[in-house]
Length: 388
Image (cartoon, rainbow, N blue to C red; front, side, top):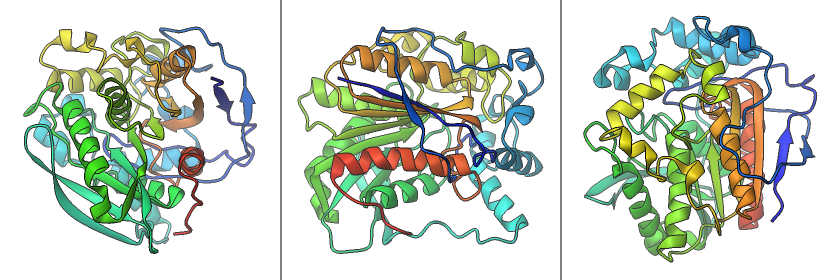
């Protein structure tokens, strides 16, 4: 299968910026259409995005504010103004209660005198569905119109410890409109109350339930995709692997946004972004400490996806951010999927941080990334985008 790798073209219109979100997301907009670049099909263990900022790696923020594009920088400054602190300095309870990148996006919009209303969708409701070990709440976003609609099972980020679908509301709304599809966002189990592999098990259980029961919400479950950000990107890929191994219905597409995909904390992007905002190396170590039973769990290929069997998976789109410790493993995952014969689209956005995807209301690159994901979903479903 052929993989398409993309890099943004000269960013004259995109000199805007990118944003972050330990738990939230908000999106961005506008840019030139990237040109395909050939990819090396060989498996890799530590591919890294190009960067000239290695001299900044050991500074207090690994040069985040210097490298961030203007709009992204505005969001980060607002996040700090709201009092958000690195999660590794907090208790789990404190981390769950503090302001998020999504809150920062709202703050920027208010400061600019612009509407902070969420992107419109047809309807939103909360339901209860079965997880692996008990019932879970889930959000269901439905487009306007008669349907039936294709369906996306979306898994939020937060390191399997913090956040929920409400924090990632902007991403769910955007994907619903991009694909004219129902989006189901579960409140999956999180650590330290529910440790590895509780979130992965819930993700598979939710997918099975949606396949079998999505018709109740006017979903056409013959057209289904999985998507997620960060820890949720890991869950989306895990569901695709489980569907293959358990002979479940195969998703039509996988969207993995800066996924947690490896166990190596010394990749080039970990080194380059060790103190980055809003996500640095110490923060990821904190997430692992609060989710894994022991460090042995990180050797499990449900955690360490870059060493999993990636053959016979659906077409996969991977989105990366330059200022992100996870950038290298996202690229490695794309390379290894390609080597396994999977159709892959990959693009890394410069000048933005982890959590930028849901920031389209402020960060132009977020809109570009949403459009990139939307192209893949529309191609899989045979739909057209909806104007919110």
